[in-house]
Length: 127
Image 1 (cartoon, rainbow, N blue to C red):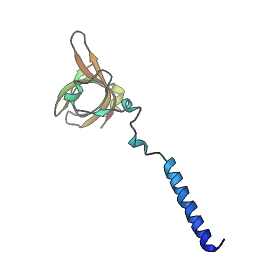
Image 2 (image 1 turned 180 degrees about the vertical axis):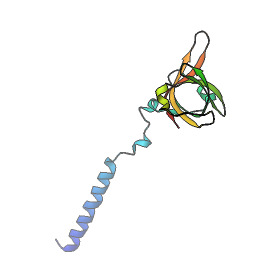
Image 3 (image 1 turned 90 degrees about the vertical axis):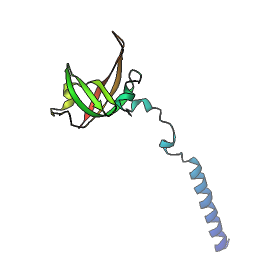
Image 4 (image 1 turned 135 degrees about the vertical axis):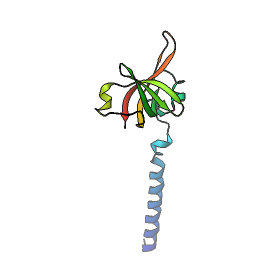
């Protein structure tokens, strides 16, 4: 074999290897639907949250404007108000004014007795 033939064979082998590797590499995970999509909170407004199903994970941005007692608070954004339940430990000792912007993550809690009432059971508070 002469030098030219060796170069051509080497180039051909490299090209075949590159094609073989390209065909075995999967598309990025983002291109595939997530199997655990329900584990992530959906950013929603208060108005949207009030119409969601029980146990739906949500993220709300707004303000806690009033303490209702027993770890329940009135939460407000530009679309409305709703009740949220925030465990005392989630405040991490920080004082929050009605104008303090917050992001809360939690789950929709729908109670039907005595009448339908939708609230959020908060898992985390971001200041």
